Image (cartoon, rainbow, N blue to C red; front, side):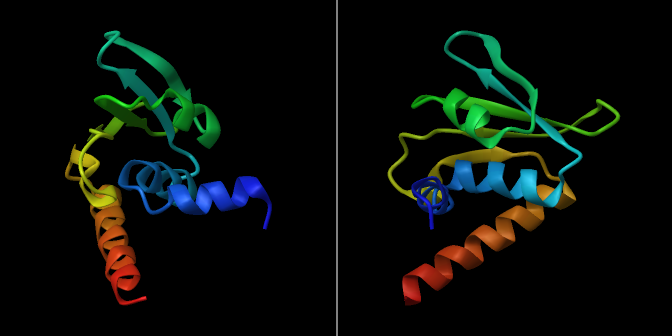
Amino acid sequence: MTSEEIIKAIDYKKGHFNMVQYILREKPEWSISVYDIEEDRFSVEKSKDYQQIKKAIKDYQTEIVCYSKEDKRIGWAWFIPYNETDEDIVSDYSDTLTLNKWSKQFEELHRRLEVA
């Protein structure tokens, strides 16, 4: 494993980075914009680049917006990275099939990590 792959695997445990990786993997036709709440602007617009999205997600409240290949807004999530645990970082998200599937796989991941 390369150091970049190891860092990405560590990120996978954290709710917000897990969600971004999941969306990019499961919906490669989607793009993600990152809204910087403190600066009141999009810091990344319609990207499929994990590193660019990760870098734009700050240590304070951040929102992501997902867009379809037709450029329609189809989902969002609210991140609070300074919450106490990796599981609590995703504060809220839109009720969509994809994000509900993300939630189930993320809960299963943390169940498996508790047993390990």
